[in-house]
Image (cartoon, rainbow, N blue to C red; front, side):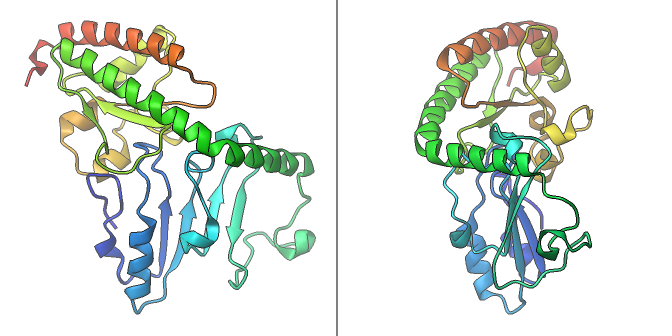
Length: 267
C-alpha cells in the first residue's frame, strides 16, 4: 500500500484490497495506526476486505479492544511484555469461517497437536497483568519518553548535530523512540553503544544483524541521511529515570566522538 512519512499505510491505495494486514504499533518508530481511518475506508469500499491487526507491539502499551478495532483477526505474542516464549495468540471474530493451516482433530479441530498448557497459563497471566497496569504504565513511560527525547536532542545540538525524532507529529506508543542524527553512521553508533553497555538498535529485533537500512524507514521515503543515522531506543516496565540519565550521558559521549570524526555534518 505504501507508507506515509509518519509511518502509516497510505489508505488511498487500499480501496480495492481483499486482505489488509497492518501493525497496530510500528515496531520501528512507535507510530500508532489510524484504525478509525481504516474502518471508514472499509465501510466505504464496495470490495469486501478482511482486516488483520498485528498487535505485538501494542498489548500493554496502548488501550486495545478487539471488537472496537473492526478487525476480522488480531494477533500478538506475550514475550514482548514479560510472558513466555514459544506461544502466541490469535483472536478471530466468531462469525468468520476459516480453515486451519495444520490438520488434526485436537483443540476442537482448530490446530493439530497438544496444547502447551504451561505456556498458555503463563500467557494468560502476563496479559492480565499488563492490561491491568497499562494506563498507569503508559503515563509513566510517556513522561520518561518526553524527557529522554528532549535531553538527547539537546545534547545532539550541543555537538553541532541536527537531530530528528521520527513520527513526532503523529500518535506514538510511549515505549519506542527513534531518533536520527544526520551525519552519524548508525552502525558505528550501535557498536559504540554496545561497548559502553548501552543496548540500542537500528531496526526491529526481526532484522537483527542486518546491515541494510530499515525497510520501514525506506518505505516512509525519508531523506537518506535520516535513514542512515536512525537509532531506535525502547523503554519498558523496568526502565526508570535513573537508567535514562545514565543512557543519555553515554549517548552524549558517543555523539561527541562521532561528530569529531565526521566534521561535515553541520547544517
